Amino acid sequence: MNDAAFVPRARHLAALLLLAAAPLHAQVTAGEWFIGSDPGFGQGHAISFTPGGTVAFDQALTAPLAPGPHVLYMRVRDAAGRWSHTQARHLHVQRHAPGHVLTDAEWFIGDDPGFGQGTAVDLAPGATAELDAVLPAAPGPGAHVLHLRARDAHGQWGHTHARHLHAHRTHTGVQLQAGEWFIGDDPGFGQGEPLAFDPADTLSALAFGAPVIAPGPLFRWAGVRTLDDAGNWGHTAMRPLLVRPGGAGVIAAAEWFIGDDPGFGLGQAIDVGQPAPLITDLLFAAMTQGLGTGDHVLYVRVFNDDGVPSQSYPVAFTVLDPTGVGELLGDDLRAGPNPTTGDFILRTEKPVTGMQLRLVDGGGRTVLEAPFTGDRARLDLAGFAAGTYHLFITDAEGGHRVLAVVKQ
Image (cartoon, rainbow, N blue to C red; front, side, top):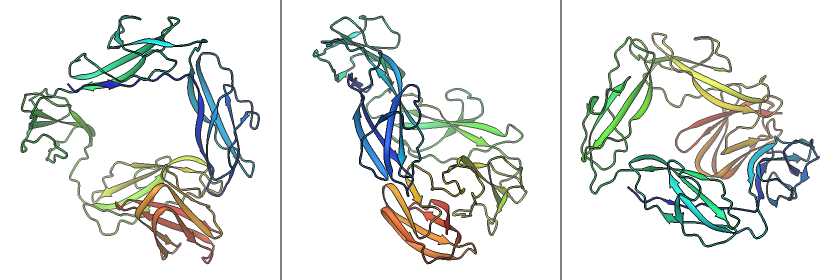
């Protein structure tokens, strides 16, 4: 078993360290926080920071709080007076008596033996403890839960902190030498269909054919596991399967829809070109005009030459702008303003390389192409006619995103 280490920490000073982001075309000018009941917009505790499109602030909480769980809320306001969503953070206030000093600690794995009955940890007395220790116990291979707690000079025990760990069986020169797979019910170790491969200490990929016999359930589970040269079986990796009657055929048609499923064949058609067993880089424009602000889901599916549909693949997105065309969502990419009268800006959380931008007009003509390297790109649309365009964003791995851009 590999040695396990833990580093518990006890903190007795709460500080606020949060990030707030405004829409690309807005400036954050004010902010507030409160704990518990909402006092109303503008009635919370003010937050001090320098106005900007994105702000960060670190502020100590001054509210007197009783020991126990609480919820901290924060929101910001832009220069137009619009408040953002109210963000919540959970916190726990520990009892802190004068002269509070942590004097000892203990840990245990599995069942709680009772306060003071765990394995003692050497601890230098202080208001804050940071521990780093090697567990001398040797739990058997598998999942376990490590628990830790500390006691102060008043004899009060703190909360019992839990950490999940997994103990692996190890030995020198381990080699994976065989494997097996199954579909449906697990037949038991050594009873599945055999897999053959050259012995190795690591398998990063394993390809094999698994014939599926119909009739049977539409959705099934496939299991794969390997055996080492010490006779130990690894975890069984499970993967879902969708079994359709008949052969796979070729992809002959595709469609998309947003929200409720209109039924097979009743979505918005996608031109797939020449039917083929595999189609990649399929680009299409999905209009979001008319959608309300908030979260939505776009679905895409294909049909083979027998008219048999695939699964419907979901892509979640959010409409932020009241006109129905908002920012491109995601933790890594922001775009706007949208609609725009000239400049259109794209920003990323981290610098990117190898990204390509292509703007297409309503007639399908490419009107602008540009590379995107770094964390910011600017497109000048001032000379373009008013209307709706589509911006195709291709990353270095060949992945695509499409954003409708409205030029006013």
